Image (cartoon, rainbow, N blue to C red; front, top):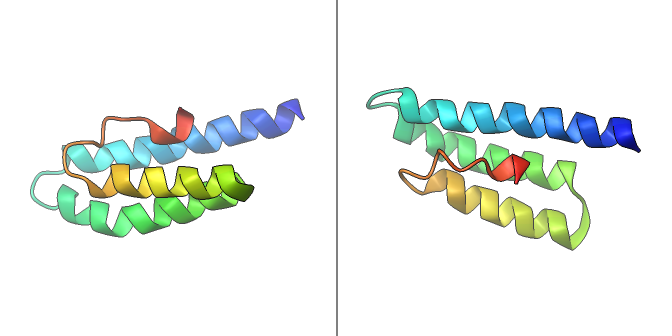
Length: 77
């Protein structure tokens, strides 16, 4: 059980870093969010099953698609 939790934490940190990195790419960064948002939502729903996973994937999609919200570490919250 503990190994699974650490694995999810490592994945969450990695995905948060990827999502945050688009904020530091001038001009192209916001357009990368359009590609990243659905992928991040899919990964969130794969990481967490059931109603919680669906709700979390909706939240991560909205957070990633909105401009200037890249600093929120949604995966690790």
